[in-house]
Structures are given as C-alpha cells and as structure tokens.
Amino acid sequence: MAEGMRVEPDLEFIKYVKNAGGDTLKKCYQCATCSVVCPLSSDTKPFPRKEMIWAQWGLKDKLVADPDIMLCHQCGDCTAYCPRGAKPGDVLGAIRAYAYTYYGFPSGLAKLVSKGSNLPLIIALPALVILAVWWLSGGMSLPAADAIDFGMFFDSHKDHPTLIGGLTLNVLLIDAIFVPALGFAIFAAYKGVSNMWNNMAANLPVKSEFRPSALQFVSQFLVPSLKEILAHKRFKECGANHNRVNGHLPLLLSFIGLFIVTTYGMIRKDILGMFIEGTHGPIPLADPFKLLANISAIALIVGVGILWMNRAHMEEENNTTPTFYDWFLIVKIMTVGITGLSAELARLIGIPVLAYLFYYMHLVSVLMLFLYMPYSKFAHMVYRTFAMAFEKYRESAFAKNIED
Image (tube, helix red, strand yellow):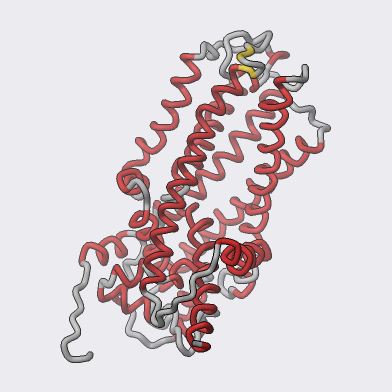
C-alpha cells in the first residue's frame, strides 16, 4: 500500500452486506477466479475481484459509485467457480440492495422498504389507502352476479356510473390514486439515478470535459442500452444461471404488453368515455387489447414462476440464505398476476365476493409495485439501464480524452 494512504472502513456497511446475503464476503482470498469467468471483466477492469476487496475493506463510497455493480446480471458463474465459496454473486446482490437504499428518495421510505421486519407496514400503507377510498366512495356494496363491473368498484351506484365532468367516479378515483403514485415513483427514481450518475462521473479515473447534449445522451447511450436490454444479450452470456433468460424475457415482455393495455384503457375510459356511450363497461373478451392483457398476464405469471423456481434451486444448490431483497419482488409480482387473473375469472364465473376481493388485492399489489419500485429489487430496471448508458458514456469520455 502506498505510504500515506489511509483506508477507513465503514463497519456498518460491512455488517449490512453480510446480513443482506453477503455473509460469505470474508472467505474471498483474491484468487481472481471470479474475474476469469465473468463476461464483464477485462484486463483493466477485474470485475468482481476489485469489488470483493473493496467490500471487505468497507469502501462503501467506492462501491456505490461503481457502475459495474449495476451492470452485473447475477449470472452465478463467479459463485459456481469460486474455490472458497465466497459467493461473489450474492455479495454483489447485497451491495446493490444497499445502493438502492443509499440513493433512495426520500430516505425514510427507502429504509422502510429495505427491511423484511417492516413487511406488515409495507403492505398496510397501500392496503389502507385503497380501503379508505373504497369505503369513502360508497363502493363497498356488492353488485348482482350478472352485473360485476370493476369499472364500478369505487361507485355506490352499481347499476349506472356516476358521471363527473363526463368521467365516471371510478375512473377519477383510480386516477387520483395511481397517477400520483406513478409520478412519485418516477420522480424518486430520477432523483436516485441522478445522484448515482453524478457519483459515477465524479469517480471516473480519467477526467474529461466531454458533456453530451440531451439528444446525444438519448441517441448514443440510452437507446442502445434499451435495445441491448430488450435483446437480453448479457443474460445469454451467463453460464450457471443461463435459464434465467427463460423467465426474465417473458416477464419483461408481459410488462410491455400490460403497459400498452393500460394506456389503451386510459384512452378508452378517460378520454373517449367523456364523449362516447358504452366505453365505461368491461372490455369484451374478444377485443384485441383484452386478448393482449390476458396473454400478458399469463406470461407474467409464467415468467416470474420460472424465476421463483430458479431462485429456490440456486439457493438450495449454493446453500444461500434467502433474503427479503430477492423474494419481496418475486412474491409481489406473482401476487399482481395471480390476483388480476383471479379477479377476472371470478367476474366471468359470477361470484361478486371473490371478484371484488381479488380486485381489491390486485389494486393493493399494483400500488405496492408503483410506490416501492425505486427502493426494491425492481429498481434494477432503472439503475441498470442508466449504468449501461454510463458504460457507453465512459467509453466515449475515454476516447475523447485520448483525442484531446
């Protein structure tokens, strides 16, 4: 070590990593086997070897500013080949969990979602919001079996929608809950990603005056990253956990499909509903968007089911301790899919109690997905995308520095 260089370990950070699934951290003796098998590693970037020693030394500030942490797809190759059982993949997962909390905004909510002991409160907050709106709207009464319409969930007049300014009461209340929740999640994710980007830029080993315009950033860095994600290129480079792509890809496509359907539903009910009669009721089963919705829901359940089985198998095979960070998202997404499909089936069969119960649970689980996205493992969707964009920016910055 160079004379005068001081290492000040963050002991609380080390404790967190060990408790969050990285309990094997200290077994690493820097043999570099993990860097040999990892596709992300290069001669100038020994990943994850350098991250393992930084974690052992408690160098939190270096790790949360390291884009390679977010680029890791947890392929499992490093863990499978590690001769000491240090499980680098699990350590890196624990570091990412810490980073989501570290960058989370507001910090209090980020810390709340990071602990499994807070699960009752994590569920209760959105559950009470939906329940309170349901009760205050007078919509808690059940319709007849042949008149079940989730478009009347928040409306006491089950036989005819209450119109306010051309919009149904149900649409207004749904929008009043979920639009702000989505807006909040997007803003919180933006704050976290912005802080991460600034930290990564400040820690570039080579300083550069290269500052891309907004158009350059989108066209040269962000769009290519999104294309790479959609193609699942890096997942396909995995060895030990190669079959994760079989679950992750249909899950990703299902979210895209459900986004399209949700957008269509908002246009149909929120905009056209003000001018055209008959757009407030359930969408017919034969409607192309309804078919896309059901196919996407099945793909979501199948995709997350494959990931569920893969996670359970990996934990059993590697003797890995299950963590709240890993399982909270898996169970939450499965709940979204199961409750949504169950609500539809109960409506078609004609059982109001089950239909409304499952729909209530579906609304709660979707609200949880929105509110907690920036702090749970779901945040990798945003952080990894921008880390990949930063990787491309970093290459351009290095190239620009050489030219100068």
